[in-house]
Image 1 (cartoon, helix red, strand yellow):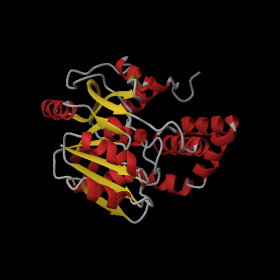
Image 2 (cartoon, rainbow, N blue to C red):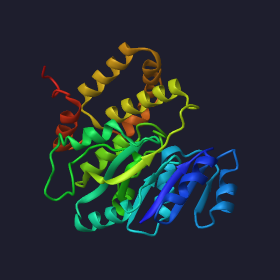
Image 3 (cartoon, rainbow, N blue to C red):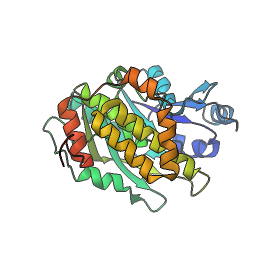
Image 4 (cartoon, rainbow, N blue to C red):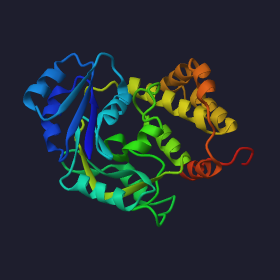
Length: 281
């Protein structure tokens, strides 16, 4: 197992949380301007620091996974870490379940360890619990709480560079499932996430999230559903409408890379989103 972290300008968080991982760590520094790479290299010489001259966003994780020499890769953010024993359990479960390409764990947020709502949603198992997976099947995940089979992750293309950050997980989840792999939620794999209370560009994040949600829909969903998503974004206005404008500028790229999901994966997406089949009320 190797832990891969992609980060930009989060030196203090990295120095605090990188030592908590119970596996070799590769840090991809996305062109930080706060001395992150030098500080981590000096304080934590066991961490393999990769210095990117540009901000790769989430695709920085791809660079780390390519360098990893282990069968499995766990992702973490600069403000998160895997609890003791979690990575060993994940490796054992992936050994025992060869169809599983990705396991996602329970996320405990903040100093009080409150459960992230996405964990409860996954535990409800709307897609059921196949016998060849170690937990409920999922079609999404939080990157900071994911362990992947390295070869499957790379074959699927990893995190799409065009999406950059925010909502980048959905497209990868769809593509893994389309390739025949299973994704599962395993609550025994626990991640602590300690985000900073402030300092993020909320409106900018909402705009980028809207852009990426639309691009993912246009790339993989049936055209009527993709069109409905665009109309909904326009009606919502604000940052969401701005995200629609950003996505529209990338339509030539979408047309080059569009690949509709297999029917069984599209059916699973509809189950999770309560999206009716095209042409039905």
